[in-house]
Amino acid sequence: MFAEFHRTLAPGGYLLWGDYVGNERLQPTHGYGRPVSYESYLLPLDRMVDLLDQAGLVVTARLEQEPGGRVNRPHACLLARKPETP
Image (cartoon, rainbow, N blue to C red; front, side):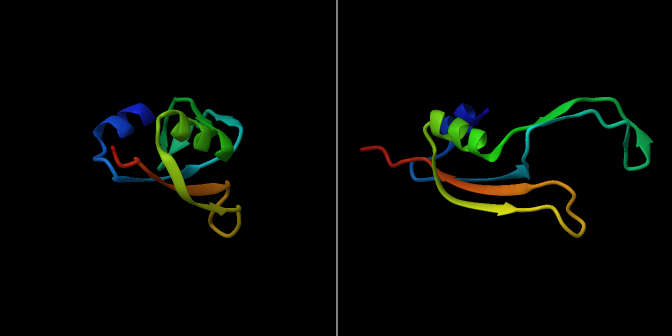
């Protein structure tokens, strides 16, 4: 997925990525009052940074939010940039 972001970004372009982070497998049974059935996986923030790096994107800023209030899981935003081509 991140390789595709790299491919489609213009040189010098930015990607802003935000999501919940962790090391957890989720299997919700209800969403918005309806029954659901799917799996998703939360990845540690450092793993997400590594994946962006492997795709050729450079993380220039990182914001982490700990759970509290209405947020029940750690959340993070990463700003990554595709390097200029020589």
